[in-house]
Structures are given as C-alpha cells and as structure tokens.
Length: 277
Length: 271
Image 1 (cartoon, rainbow over the protein chains, first blue to last red):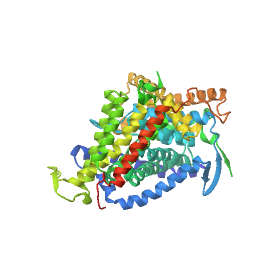
Image 2 (tube, each protein chain N blue to C red):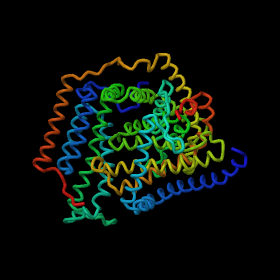
Image 3 (cartoon, rainbow over the protein chains, first blue to last red):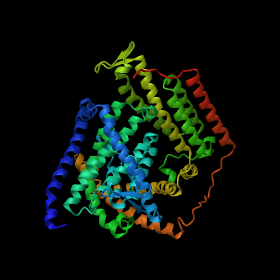
Image 4 (spheres, one colour):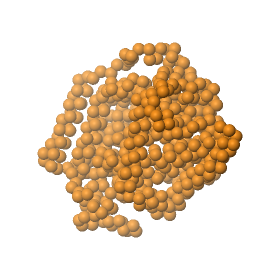
C-alpha cells in the first residue's frame, strides 16, 4: 500500500479503536455499577428489550452463516472475494501440533487465569479469551480448531460440558476464524491492519460469537432449558463485553509482537496453505 | 506431572471406572433424553438422584460432589429467577412473593422452573461423572471408535496431554513475572488486562517452539503414514458394558412408558 493510502487509514483506525474500546469498557463499567447497586444490568435490559423475535431472526442469520463457514472450511472449501474455491490444508504433523497446542494453551489459559475479579466473590473477565483471534490470525484454520477444542476442554474442566458446549465449540471457532478470514493484513504493521482488527476481531467477532452461542441455547431450549431472559438479557451481552474488552485492550499488541516470531518459524498460515483457483 | 493431575479424571478402581467409554456415552444420551422427556421435577429429580448414586459408586471425592452441587445451585438459581416470572407461568394461586422485588411465584411457575433447572443440571452432571471416571486417552479412543476422524481425536488427545504442561508453564511465568514486580490484580480494569501481556507473550513463544518440536517428533515417527490406526491399549466392550447398556436402554423404555403411555411426568403450560 502506498504511503498516502496507508495514511488514509490512520484516522479511521484510531476512531474505530476508540469507539470499540469505549463500548467494551462502558459495558464492563455498567456491569460493575449495576451489580453493585443490586439492579438489573442496563445492557442486559436493553438487549432483552429488543425482543426474542428480533434476536431469533438476527441470530438465525448469524448462526446459519457461521455454521456454513464452519463446515465449508472443514470440508476444504473457502471463499476468496465472492468466489468459492478449494483450499488444501495438509493436516500434517505441524498442523495437528498447532491445533493441539492452541487447544492446550487456550484451555489451560482459561483455566489458570480464571477470571479477573471486579466484584469480590464474582469472577468475571476471562483474560485468555484474548488469545482466540490471535490463534486465528496467525495459524488460520488449525488455530481456529485449536481455539474451539480449547473451549471444549475449559468447559469440561469447569464441569459445564453439555449440549450447549456444541454452540460454544463453533462460536469460539468463529471468534478465531473471523479475523483470520476477513482481515487483509495480519502483521498488525499498518493502520489498515489495526482498523480491520478492531472491526473484525473485536467488534464483529465478539458479537458473532455471542449471538451464535445464544441462538443455539435459545433454539435448543427444550433440550438445554435455559430461560430466554437469561440467554438474551444476560448471557449474550456478557459474552460480547467479555470477549471485546480483552481483545480490544491487548489482543492487537500480542498479535503485533508474535507475528514475526510465528512467521520466522514457518508456522504462519499463509505460508502453509494452498488454494486451487 | 501426569495428564490427569489438572483434568477431572480421578483414578480409582470401581465398576464405573472400568466401563467402556462408549457405554458411558450411551448412558449420557439416556440421561439427556430422559431429562427432556420429564419436564416435571417430581419425576426428573429421580434421574438426578440416580446420577448421585452413580457418583457414589464411582467414589467421587467430596470436592467433586461440591462442584456438582455448586453447578446445580447456579442453574437452579438462574431458572428460579427468570422462569416463574413469565406471564404464562403466572397462572394459579401465588405460593409466595419476594419482599422487595415483588416477584410472584405460582405453583406451576415453580414446578416449571425447577424442571428446567434439572434438565440443565442432569446432562452436565452425567458428563462430569464421565470425565471423572474415564482416562482421557480412553475417552478419546472411545469417541474415535464412534466415528470421530483419527486426526481430530489426536488433536484432542495431544491437547489433553499438553494441558498440564501448559498449566504449569503459565503458573511458572506468572510467578516469574510477579517476582519481577508484576501485580496482576492491581489497577483499573484496563491496567489489569494489560498486565497479562508479559504472561501471554512468553507463553506463546514457548508454544511456538513446542509446536515445531512436536511436529518434528511426530514426523520422525511417520505420523499419518498409514490410514489404519492401532492403539497400545485397545478398548474392549465386555459383558459388563453390555449389561450396563441394556440397563440404560431398559430404564429409558420405562421413562418413555411413563411419559407417553401413562401420560405423566410433564408440566402442561400453554405458551
């Protein structure tokens, strides 16, 4: 990209970064203030006020698209622009090792770092969530699969593994997949990369993951049994804020630091994947 | 440190531990399906009771039972807060009203909420028991024999194998950084999240190196050279597994009989 073109992205990148960080910090702040005051969380109230029908419709679109992406990628297909093409991931020992170690680090990280306590007795933000977009951006599909498996492991260690975890599996896959697929530059060494990061990895990724899991919990209500008000009025905004705040504040910096290391060791996804036009 | 040290697996010699993972997965499916069939908690509570009995037979530790009950309490609380307040469940006489919030609870509201809570709790408790009584390697082999592709199963197996290593490394890095003056729990929320950068950077750099080493060692052992896989410890479906599976299916038949022939075990709500 030319210097002029690069400069054109500086202001949009700064604006989107400030907006996304402000939204996620405000979400965390309102959660803290409302919980301390013993009243319902205002974000939850606002989400729920949009109605279940709204969320079923919107969530359905997110869910169908997300599921198509998931199975399409696993089936060896992807899209470039608007064109569906075949991709060849080798799934050799290196890809298997990447997926497994991403899963171990993500699952272990979620377990060890637990949650940042912002209200005593109530653990909340999961710092290891910041790893999911990084795994997708740097390792591609094996990294996204690793993130999904890591979430499965963390669920099992917490004793929460159930039918709902299937939604969590694909939802976490998407959290890593969206920045991998939609960001143009994963090196984080251009203003455009930072703009894309805040847009796709933080904002859209977090929202997509939360809505995907919530919609799954909603439609499988006869099997899972969670109240709709809990799903859309607490769980969904909670997951959005949880994912967004940690990825917004440090995820980009981590990707910036790690990109040259991953590239140097030959593990960057673009160096390992082949596309058949 | 062994792989099970950080997982849920509790190595013991009980009949539940000796069962084939596939028999336990069948049991999980029966627990889930039975819990769905019974929406009345006066019926589904017996499924929960059976899970506790299985847990006692498997000699789960008090700490593990505490985890079961703590998880159950969280879901029961969430269901009791949200479900009974739905307008469709506000029919019939009010049993009690919360003093400050003025939330009214009817009999049908309470029954429905408890039924839903048990529906959530039963499968996750069953899964907790499965993970507590099944060696991770055997669990992975079990699901691979049920059709999971070998490479997918292998990813899960290596991840579980490396989990304690990762946990140990993360703890070591946290301690090392804290000894250099890092205070993870200090500052506002932004500062506290930023404090994780010096923890995750060395962890991920180690991970990258381990990935290359692991990949090379797998390559040197000709990973993926043959389609047909063999296992050092082959799972066998023994007589006890057949008896257990038959028992599960029989119990499910009884559930179906009660629910659909006798038409009992559900809470009728007009949505």
